[in-house]
Each structure stands twice: as C-alpha cells, then as structure tokens.
Image (tube, rainbow over all chains, first blue to last red; front, side, top):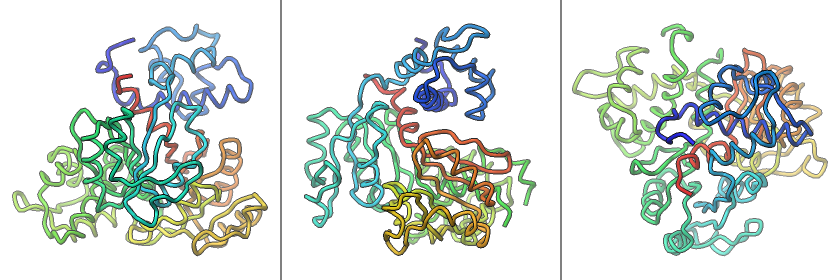
Amino acid sequence: MPEKTTISDMVVSRLPYYLQALRHMASQGHQVILSQELGTHLGISAPQIRKDLSLFGEFGKQGTGYDIANLIKQLNQILNTNCVWEMVIVGAGNIGRAIALYQDFIDRGFRIAMIYDNDPQKIGSRVGNYTVQDTKGMAAAIKAKRINIAVLAVPAAEAQEVTNQLVEAGIKAILNYAPIAITVSPDVHVQHLDPVVYLQQMTYYLET
Amino acid sequence: MPEKTTISDMVVSRLPYYLQALRHMASQGHQVILSQELGTHLGISAPQIRKDLSLFGEFGKQGTGYDIANLIKQLNQILNTNCVWEMVIVGAGNIGRAIALYQDFIDRGFRIAMIYDNDPQKIGSRVGNYTVQDTKGMAAAIKAKRINIAVLAVPAAEAQEVTNQLVEAGIKAILNYAPIAITVSPDVHVQHLDPVVYLQQMTYYLET
C-alpha cells in the first residue's frame, strides 16, 4: 500500500465511484469487468481508471479485465471500509431523519450509532429504530464509544458551534449537510453536501 | 461575461461556496468583506478567491474588500440563480421527502414544483404542501411546465430508466441521490450526492 500522502485527492475521490459501480455489477451477477466497461458506466476514461488502480497494485491482467469480487475487496481495504464505521447524526430534522433511515449504509461500511438534537420536542422521539438523544450527552458518548464520524444536519447558525463540540470529542470526519462552511483543524476531514451548492454548479451551465 | 467554456469547472464549483458564505455574512449584518476573511471562512486561499472572481469582472478594490450585497447579486447572475428554477423530485422515500421539505431552496434560486413516485402506497400521500404524483404523468408535466432540473431519489435499480425518461422529457440537470452512476447525453449535467461515496472519500484518510 503506498503512503497516503503520495496519492492525490482527485484519485482518492474516484475510488468510491469505482466501488459503487463494481458492487452494482456484482449484484447483477457479473464476475469480470474490463476497464472500458467500467469507464463507459462512470463517464471516466479507461486509461484513467487503469492508472488510478495501478497506483495501489496489480488488480487485473491486460485484456482479461478485473475480477470484480477481488477488486471490491481491494477497494474496501484501500478505503478502510472493510470494517464498519459507527457514526452519529446531529440534527433530527428532515435531513437528519432521512439519513438515519437510509438503508444503504451497513453493506458499505457504515452504521448510525446515535442521533442527537437539542430541541426538547424532538428529544425522546423515535426515528426508525433510534430514539433521538439530547445533545448534552453527545460529547461524552462519542468519547466513550470512540466514534470518528459525524453527520451534521443542523441549521447554519448552529453548525460551527456543534462542529467545535464534535471535534473536541474526537470526531475526525464530518459529512456536512448544513448550508454553511465549517472551520476545523487540519486533521479533521469535511465533505459538504449542501444540495443548493450542487444545483448551482449545474445552473451555471443552463440556458435561462 | 466570459464564454462559459473558457472558465474551468473547478472555478465554477467554488462559486456557490462563495455565494453561500457571503449570504451568511450578510445575514449577520456585514456589508464589506476582504478576500482574506472569505478565504479563512472557506479554507480557500485569498489569492485563489481574487483570481476566481476576477475572471468575471472587477468586483472589489484592492485593500477595501468586496461589497457583499453587490457580490451576492453578481454571483447569482453568474450562476443563473437570480431567477427561480422549478424542480421535480422523483422518489418519495426518505431522501425524496426530506428534499421536498427542505426550507433552504426558495431564497437561493430553487423551488420544488412536483414530487413523483411509482408506488401506489405513496401516490396521493402528502409531503408538506405537496401531494405525491404518479410517475406516469411525469414526462408530460415536465414538458408542459418546461422544467429543467430533477432530483433523483429512487433505488439504484430504477435510476437509469427514470433518468432516461427525465432526459427525454427535457431535463437538463439532475441531482442524483441514487447510489449508482447514471449515463446521460453530454448536454445533461449530473451531480452525484450518494452519502456513502463522500464518507468513503474521508475514511481513506482515517486511522483504523
């Protein structure tokens, strides 16, 4: 396995899409895939795919394609998703509840451990199999369970303060659905999923 | 305004974050912002921000910063969000419903027009102010209302077929929450928001 720092973020960002596509192929009963087929499915060139994967090892033979089950296993190992990561959700509004009920986590390396809110109306209410907990106990529970990942689904005005609490409690990766940038120390990873940002990245190109 | 094709996708992808931050600053009563402050808030260097914005015009004077209200107006014009885009949601499951109930669209250039599903149990049910419609009437309604944007929140197995119907009906931009890549013609824009992909882009860097 190469040093983490030698692989560019752009390469890393493509790996989960390869894994997503391969899992789909496997679910359809396929056992082998050519980089050309994978490329057509993902809109990424076959040479790019071969180059990306070759950074991590020899996963296929020229002309015979990749063994799908093996490549899934290797990608899960590279992405650290051969284990299951426990996550907390902060915010039991519409987005937080939808994420808590999302069915597609467990097979792909993630599990919701707890969901939190600071609204007395929401604390104690049920979301699927979860009971919404008071954020007062959040930091202690994250520390006790050594949880590394949080889903942030709070209003913009509260996002930074909650982030500070999460990072203080040991969170190292935040999936941020709040419509605002959050500031973290360099050892904490953040992905922004504000839907409006992604919509605006497309409307730029649309004719009005 | 420069030709769309002369601006890199990377620059375009940063503009909605500038707009998001500026709206937050304005909501806190600020009127002027230096590129350094904007950069600190977003984790983007000040020279990068000045360079990005200078591609579209002269929005600030050296040393005095940007007029926030003016820059918001200019960015909305650049991103085509000085109008309101109508959108359809396909899929009235957890994610589709959460998006339908999302409060942060209208002020930022977007409005949900309709929500669709093909499940008889869901058709006719209420989601906030919306009634879930049968996907059978979807293509005709999109054409009649000349809707350009769709939010795809269907299971992976149905994603491509629904995408084909949407594109055939005239959809030019798709926000894809389905956990699978979709194939579209080059004139259609797609953004993938599968949460697991974004989580895996972070777990790569975490210590296990």
